[in-house]
Structures are given as structure tokens and as C-alpha cells.
Length: 161
Length: 90
Image (cartoon, rainbow over the protein chains, first blue to last red):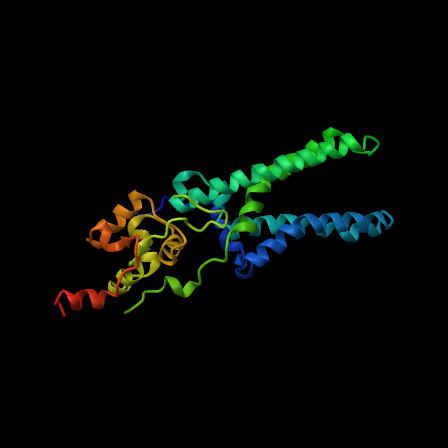
């Protein structure tokens, strides 16, 4: 019995560098996904309009990191049951529960800030506009953060001739 | 399977998967393909980090041609050689 043919997002694993499979590398990419655009935005804000274009390539960093994170997690966060085994289904379900809790906390924090600091130049619409895409990506980030290092390749080799 | 917060199973179920796989010269990938799971899951089972469902236990039992209690146990297994020697097989 074999697993069904894999969907396209599983194939992202082929373009994912090997170092990205390590948990420490995945965690770094999750942090940098948010940090790099923020720092680039701050940096661009200090420069005039022409020099701020220097930071434009940094917009690609989160996209590349997200593709690698999907590949490094085997796209398990967004896969239907038929592409996963029983352990992976349990892991995916736990991941969604954790992502939901994190999203709930982020929404509470966002609206809490808006309630206590009503003079901030941010509206509830802005908060939702940020949280919606984050909510879509959050299961992959959560899985990338929690999934332990994969087994070494040699463990798949036959144990004797 | 009940799991604690650190994801380790609360009930330890010992297994002989590593020995049985080695006896048959199978890689984790070979065994995983035979029972329709990811090879990483075989590693989790062998390390005791994951307890299989009854369905998976039956699949492994059928694949190895052994009763479930010969593969999984709530108490640590004796070495296979010791068990065979005590039964006078070797």
C-alpha cells in the first residue's frame, strides 16, 4: 500500500535547502519573516524616496522564507487527511488548535491596544487587514516552530544487505 | 492516545519494531511503504515517542506475521535471543 500522489505544495520540499529542515533554522525564519519587512520599512522611512528603493528586495525575503517553511514542514499544516498518516493528522490537528489559540491572543491584543489607546493612528480595519493573512499562514508557522528535527537520512537505509 | 504537554505518550508501549525490521533487512521507508505511513512515523514508533492506533498495530502485525503482543507490550521485552534460549529453540 502506498500514499496517494502528492499535491503541488508537497513539491516545495524539493526547492527547500537542507539546512532549512532543522528546527533552529525554521524558528529563525519564522522570526525573520516578521522582522525583515519591519526593519526594511523602518530603514526605508529614514531615507528619501529614491534611496528607499534599496530596501525593495527585502520584500522577497518573507516570500522565500514562507516557501521554504512550507517545504521544510512537508506542507503538512495545510494537507487533507488522505495525504497524511495517523500521526501526521494528529500533529496537524494539534497545530491548528495551537494556531487558533495564538490567533485569538493576537486579536485580543490588537483590540485591547485599540481600546486603551484610541488615539493611535490604527483602525480596527487595519488590525483585521494584518491579522487575516497572518491567520492563513499561522498553522505553517506554528508547525515550523514546534516540529522537531527530522530523522537523519541514514536511518532510512536498510539495516543489512 | 493521551499525551502530556510535552507530547510524550502517558502510557509507555514498548515494541520490537527495530529488531523485526533489522531481521528482515528493511529500511524504515520499506516498512512505512508496506503499511502506508510516513517513514518518520516508523522512527517515532521505534523511539517510543508515538503509540500506534489499533488499526496501525494490526497492519504491522499482519505485515510481520506475528500476533500484536509479540510486537507491542506494556512491559519491556526481554532480548529475543534470551527468550528463544529459555524456550530451548537455540
